[in-house]
Amino acid sequence: MIEVLQAGICDLIVDQGRRGFGALGLPVGGAADAEALVVANRLVGNEETAAGIECTLAGPRLRFPAGGMIALTGARFAATRSSGAAVTWNETLMMGENEVLTLGQAESGCRCWLALQGGITVPEVLGSRSTFLPGGFGGHQGRMLRAGDRMASGMFLSQVHMMRAFPPTAAGPLRVVAGPQVRLFDGAGLAALFAGEFHVTAASDRRGLRLAGPRVAYTPADLPSQGVLPGAIQVPPDGQPIILGWDGPVTGGYPVIAGVIRADWPRLAQLRPGDAVSFVTIELARA
Image 1 (spheres, one colour):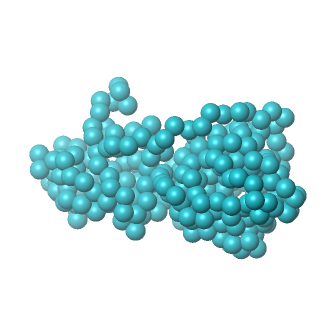
Image 2 (image 1 turned 120 degrees about the vertical axis):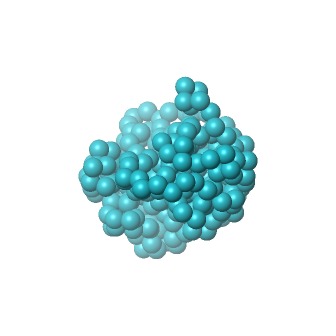
């Protein structure tokens, strides 16, 4: 069991998301870095699909009434334990009875993931325990965690998997492939995207990363709504790109100039307001 003594900026119950509901307007959602949550679950002997906690920028203060085994992956946060024991990432940690874990500010990056042996046993909604904030369902009562919330754990596997630590997050431009409306952008528009530098704005969230930088101009056109995925780079009329996120819309009417390749989605999960962003195009086969 976990008890929330103090909430962080945005603490959510997440798993691998809910697939197959795009026709109803629901994105897959789930952990912003699915692989990081998988690793955390393996470290505590859970099924890979078990639910954990995703923390953004500054984490919560959590009490473990019965103790238990946990693991942390993703960005490193300032962290302490009431026992005085070290808090490490990408390793199995044993929490004592009534021990308190405090996750402070992210030291780098934006998000981390916490797995508890047995997983977080909130009710499933449409086959997933993930919180979907725009719809107000899933997770713990469809919202961010608050002080006083208590969540139980369930069954776990008998084997804990030892994992190597994640390599450092790659630096450099985000790698993209051409989008379906790339031909609406002339040389100046393409140069603005690929030669310019953008910054993540404070208006960004799990629905999308809003960027500020050189104006990416294009030829206006009446476009029908089209299916879109996380990583799609839409350009609204103001020319400031939006990288769609994990809880973003499944259809959109703005032109999509490019798409961030899936291998770089974990990098999107660690971008925070003020971070610089640039792009480089690669061939689809390489992606």
